Image 1 (cartoon, helix red, strand yellow):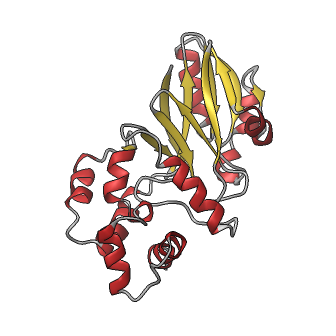
Image 2 (cartoon, helix red, strand yellow):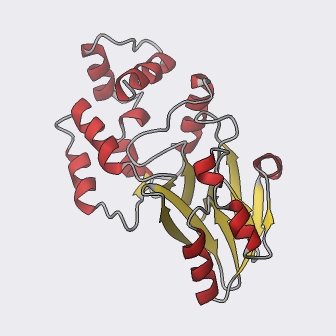
Length: 234
C-alpha cells in the first residue's frame, strides 16, 4: 500500500491510500487531481472517508462519488468496525476526539493520517470543548513508534513552528525540520514532533520549566496540557 498526498484550498491536505487495483480517498477535496491520478494508474476507488465532519474536509465527497463507483463510509461505522480493508491489507481506525467529537485517525504500516487532531508542529484547536478527551487522544497517538510518519489535515508548518520557536527560541530541532520542510510533501515523524511540537511535550522537563516561568499551572498533566493551550492558541 502507498499513500499520496493532495493539496487543495491553499493549505488543506487530502490523501489517497492505494494498491495495485484499489484506492481509499481520505478528505478528498482535490477532486480533479485525485480522479486524474486514479485514471492514470488504472485504479478503482473503493471507499470515500473523512477524518472529521468539518466541511473543508468533506467538500469533495459527492464529486468523488459521482466520478467513481466508490462507497462512502461514515465515521461512526468506521469507529465501530475499527478496520478498513483494501486488497487484503488493514487500515486501522482510531477514534481521536478533541478537535471534534467525531475525529478519527487512520493507521497503515508506519503512516498515520491524523486530520486536524495532530498537525506538524502543533495539535488542532479543541472545537469539541473536551480538553480532557483531547489529551487522551493525543496520549494514544504519541504512544506510536517514533518512526511513525504523521500526515496532517493542513499545512500549517511555518505558522505553527514560528509559535514553537517563540516559546522555545533555542530549540535547534525546529530549525532542522524547517530546513527540510517541503510544501509539496508535508510530513514529520513522531520522534520529530516529540522534539519540536510544544503541545506534545506536556511532560517534558524543559517545557514544564518554560510554563513555570510564565506563571502557568504545572502541577498535574492536565494542568500542563491546559497551560500549553493557553500559550499556543492565545
